[in-house]
Amino acid sequence: MNASALPALLARIHLPDMALVRQRLENETLDDVPRTVAEEAARIGLERCVRPGQSVAIAVGSRGIDRLAHVARSLCDLFRGLGARPFIVSAMGSHGGATSEGQTRVLADLGISELTMDTPLRIGLGTVRLGDSDLGMPVLVDAQAAEADHLVVVNRIKAHTKFKAPVESGLMKMLAVGLGNDEGARLLHGLAPVHGMYALIDAAARVILERGNLLCGVGLVENGLGRLHTLRLLPPNEIPEQEPRLLALAKRLAPKLPFDELDVLVVDEIGKDVSGTGMDTNVTGRNRDILGDFTSTPCIKRIFVRDLSPGTTGNALGIGFADVTTDRVARAMDREKTAINALTGLSPEKAALPLHLPTDRLALAATIHTLGAVSPEELRMVRIKNTKYLELLLVSSALLDHSTTSLEILHPPRGMDFIGEDLAPFPELNG
Image (cartoon, rainbow, N blue to C red; front, side, top):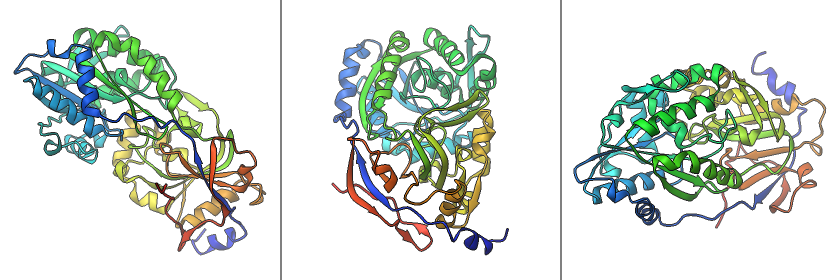
């Protein structure tokens, strides 16, 4: 079908009026990062473990974590204050195109560079074999991290998008997957269909905890607004016991859509800085993987993705979870970077490009068209900025009849705002 036929086909589709609402989410925030880092270091007696002149590798991943650069800089300053020699390594598996240059750029986009940290960056893809896990898998660790006198890993603890277990996304996963660079990540993901992700992560991480040079893990938990809520320094022997407790806290605080069933979800942006799968499957309830097809609430009939986030730098992993997208996404997609990430995770379905159309208006009309005969007054539609920030929502009139007390209506339903043929930018919260 040529492009000129699309407007005629979709002209009969009428868009619903949308109201702007605000969710009441957990908003307690950790205020003083350097002070908290110092207090946690004193609590676990870190000064007794580090001698002047020793090297400390601080491993940082690729996620867009609130104040990650602030946390990393506070750790660098802490170890310099103890007379040690800190440096930064990456622990992000195949992200950044699985190149040193790409991973250096990812860190820079997160605010982590030699200039901002006042600390050397040693970003490489080489690994050393620390041993074998109980499942017979070689356990690989970044070579430069392994050569340091001490290793510190920093990561956010949250629900994983691929599996449910006592430990999901956090310190144990960073040790087992991220710290193994591209080679280690590929190895572990390749065995996941046989053993399962959790079993492999647990077995590999315990080898590093027992035999490696890990000084501590820095576990971060964010509140419902995506801001830093909790920061804990955990020595190796405490990580297996304490990380599940932090995961339970993270799940309790995590934002969710306040509806169990939707006809359409409009997502303004997806990206690796938002979620490992571009859009968090714990929010959308939609997941497909070689380990199984997982569907949970909310039940969403159609998902329309408008764009990629600037921080994802072209990595469009997760676009395969959408039903419709825009030509804009197709143009911005870095095919090689997305393919490397998808192949490492054995997830080609997450990189599959859905139907894409020239404008938001056409793409949204096409999305609604595929629902069948649904009137604008009955259509249950939500628009979000991304799956990480869910305080503000645009919701159709039909959903207001089912709204909960956690929703505050900021403006009543009105026609959708367009600039030309594309949706106007997502509203910002004033004050």
